[in-house]
Length: 87
Image (cartoon, rainbow, N blue to C red; front, side, top):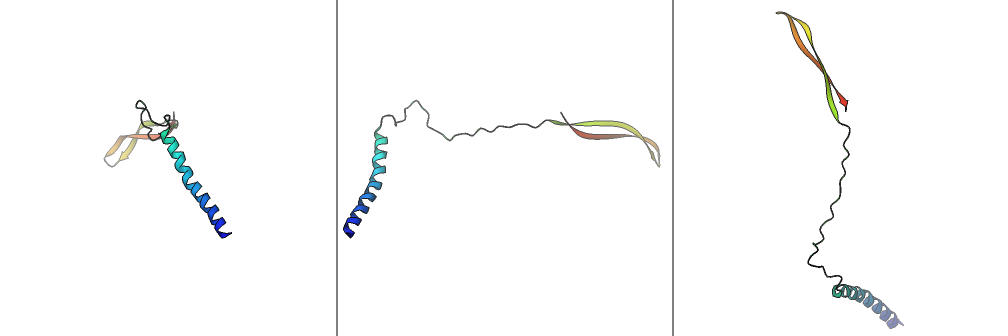
């Protein structure tokens, strides 16, 4: 009884070992599986990256001249204020 179980296990192990070897031999001898000389070798697949730009921002500024009182006298001094605006 023990020898029969051992024989069955041995047969299944042999089938699992030999089955992939026969499959690979069939693929190697197939004329379809041979690469042709005109096709380039398959390289890594390049992934496509899509870039969706946000709305552009730009600076809007307002400038003016302002009188400032200094110890040496009154001076006309430039002023500017800026902020970001979506375009």
